[in-house]
Length: 382
Image 1: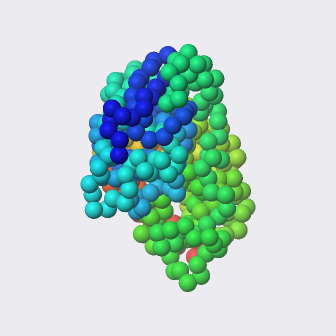
Image 2: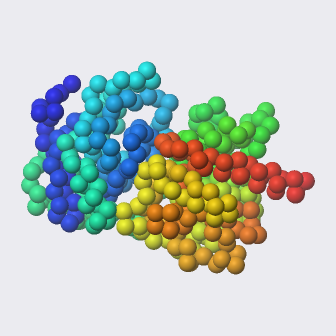
Image 3: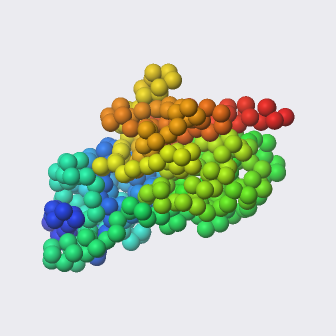
């Protein structure tokens, strides 16, 4: 352990020239990324391991972070995905019966920088007013001009395919709550078979599908439609993932080929890819939606769900052909599109995260809706 005043100084320099000073509680060197904020009061481990954060430096708006440590059960991927972590105050003594290591040890094992002592509320306000922007964290220099030049040369995320950096390299079977190195279905299993595209899938999505009696084969993002169909799945799932959806052109083409072939459900990036495959367009939000308290209205029932979200891009609801596509959910903060379904093809999607992790479980019914859609289509073809 080191006392806060013993920790080395660190700088956060944003592309607009704004500078925040703090201290490094773990790591050394530099980290580049898009600086974004998350409003969750808990769930920092799930945030750190969510592949949708690839390429981003995350700050938490809650002031004390690290209180309950890290455990092996709350991982949302096999590694830390964020580029670096910014907090107000690091808690060096985790207290929780599930804790296996400290946050600092967790980040150190992953080779990531974590800084504290930053006024994270001021940083969040700045991002809200000016928009999410590129930034660099440095512990090895106090030369602001050099860092500003470096961050302005960084290309950012627009037009960049980030999915290739997080997708699996080969197919695997999700079984018993873990990935298994198998390329085929378990013949002894009697439930629905789901082919899941890994654009940066969170493990809790797979846990939710398995909990509902499914077995899941997870495929790399670049897998072509013919290969997916050769496995004859009962349903197709499109996962969350990082970056600009319009840059993942190969996946858009594959989704377009698969539409109508099998029941399909998409979450987050998967939702955006479905919209693009249906002829819609996407755009970058000013500062995105990242947290566990986003209100969403189900337009068919009028009910309000409090949802977990993590996205910086959004589907333009005016770009969709509403004679064929039904808009199903809206964000009540800014009235952006949060869900859609096709009127004739068995496909639906949502922008938010019904699997939570972290967050409320208001939207977990959507997994049941997917199973019901598969059941309906399978009975129709018998």
